[in-house]
Amino acid sequence: MSEKKVQDKQLVLSIIIPTRERADTLFYTLKTCVDQDYDQFEIIVSDNFSNDNTREVVESFQSPKIRYFNTQARVSMSDNWEFALSQAAGDFITIIGDDDGFIPGAISKAMALLGKTGASALVWDKVEYCWPDHINPEFRNLLKVCLVDAVYYVRSSQKLRKVMNFREGYTRLPCLYNAIIRRECVEKIKKASKNKRFFNSIAPDAHSGIVLSRVIDRYLWSRYPFSVNGASRHSNGTASTNPNLDLKDSPAQKFIQENKIQFDQRLKLAPTVITTVMGEYLQAREFNPGLGFTEPDWNTYIKALVKEARTSQWSLQIMQSAVHTATALNLKCPGSVPKNAAASRKNSLPSGFDEDWLTLRAPAGTINNVEDACRFAGCLLSDSPKFKRSLRIDMLSRFYRQLISLLKQLYRSL
Image 1: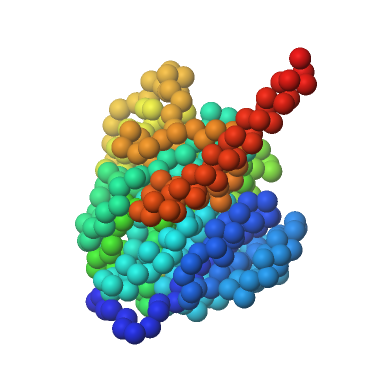
Image 2: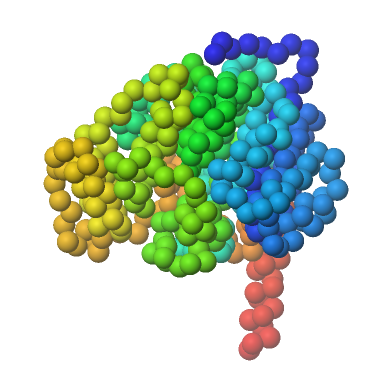
């Protein structure tokens, strides 16, 4: 799709927030959105028939920018995302999770960049934040921020090739979930699809990046993290990589039970993003035959599974998935997993945490939710000394109040 600049008018952005029974985190997500200093945007909250006070939380903001919709029945994640997408009216679209948030001033910065360059998509690596209620106690209040502010053009075909060779994560693709995408690119996918849907998927975020890679020739990739990815006790991804996966009330189990789509029979789902990426690629290939998706490299896929099985706590399940695919295609499954592979695996930070980023554990009482995390990240990233100073003062005052409270408690106990 050719790039084009929009002259003499401010681009309108649709921020979509699919949600279900996460009113406690949704409040802070909405706060980061309504506090943005950009004028032309709408916030679409698509409530997947929640039984909690989600609607009351939304209405408490009394913001004309927020449009609330309810699916009127419990639907799958992809159906909720599709429903929400159908309500969007902006020139550009982005989707944000209901425990995530936008950094202060991020929308103005992003839309100015899109308007200046005429690019069809802007993709970024998000700040990673683990809420205080994260399932794994070791990860609680961890924060990872990239302090580099640089923008590059990326060829979609080259990036998709790397993703399908499992040398790079799918979040580097133009996913609606970690990018701002021109609306007409989304409409082009819907028109090309067999059933006129955008999301023919189990994992809609991965699916969006794969299909959009076929209609966007190149896009902007920013090291500046415009948003914060929050991992709370509600998160599907958090639950699916936790040993308590078999709990009936876990978000991951609800996600699996409500799914109506079956991946290609040559795949066996396992707790690894590798099977998800391959499954969504095959879904995209089936439902969008006109977009030129080629046959995937199955040997590379099997080798990637075996490699991950050697270090994963889910070694057995991942290896079984590799064997299943190799058997179905009459291919060789290289190597095996040592019996003690899972036991020898060291605890590591969530995906994306590495030495190239600033990683820290936020002091108790200073960062309690994703809004706090967004403000803190904004403090670190802002070029404005005045803005940095105001945020630092706010964070320091919270820390000192917490310290004084602890000292008072200690004094009373003596």
